[in-house]
Length: 456
Ligand code: CFM
Image (cartoon, rainbow, N blue to C red; front, side, top):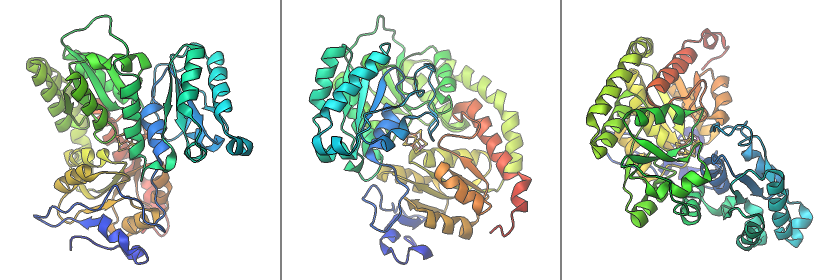
């Protein structure tokens, strides 16, 4: 029984191609990264969300101006589902900028409004080092010439004004938005500045967005090894860091869905190699540190750090493992975290019975299918009706997913942890693993679940 059709999908038989139950010895990858079937109420985000909300938005010292109707600007607020923190707390994520396109602008064009918005926003916040302008769907439809407006405004205000043509409808999911942001940052920013000094141990951490401060626990591990972090892409990044990123000796790539594009471009143009790593859990983090250390000949330093970090957390991890052994988990993330975390759950003695992604590509599913156990359900881009069927039929002991799914899980009495913006994170590397384990332990063992009437 390789591909399977959930009961709720009888009216949308196309969904069968996206739903796979792993059989021993098989290497089937469910259909993915294709347009959503009409009638399927997808939970996917749009291209603009991937460009602005994921990759562009974390840059801490630029105005993020949304060119579109005001509703699209909701994504700019730090109070939303993403919590990519920065140390520029007086500005970053505190303000929301939009051209607030109304009906008449849409009819007569929004170029003047865009120009005036850029100039006004900069006059109000002259301390910023640039302006990023993001196109929403409407702009693609009316054809405003963002490029020339941005160029003219940049000449007037004297800082880079960079347009991102990330109209929401362009891709099948937010994934294309990541790609567009990578391309624009590479073309317009990387290589435009030189660092004051270079060391033989300069790295960039690519593909970490500092969710609840992940980077603030990741970076010290690399620094303790003797490495210098030149740039982070894009958690807590300044546009000036990004401009100098081409001078690093190695790109350490964490999120392997939102950043392989820029890593490949930098390798091609600047001969800068990249190394994919997983920075979650003991085994994967230790491997990452060892791999990076081997590149620089810092193996001894890495071993010392690994030993001290692991010994610090092991007693607590053992405790959680004892209490979580045999629990069955269903993970539904955007893409790579689904496969990063299959290993992590195993480290806690739990079993992943299902894994899903919103916008994973073939390489994400290959890793999921390889890592999940026989009988595991692998489903691409599930909608909430399908999620409900999975939660009630498979009855996992834990559901790891995002805010949109949280209340669905609660309604069905399934313990839940937010794997996107976290509960009480950060969740990366060693100290974050303990927090992750603690949140999982707390929710699974919460007595409230037993009090829910009609728990399925
Ligand atoms: Fe990369 Fe991410 Fe993810 Fe992603 Fe995301 Fe995220 Fe995610 Mo939510 S960049 S692909 S678009 S690891 S916001 S920090 S948790 S869906 S699996």
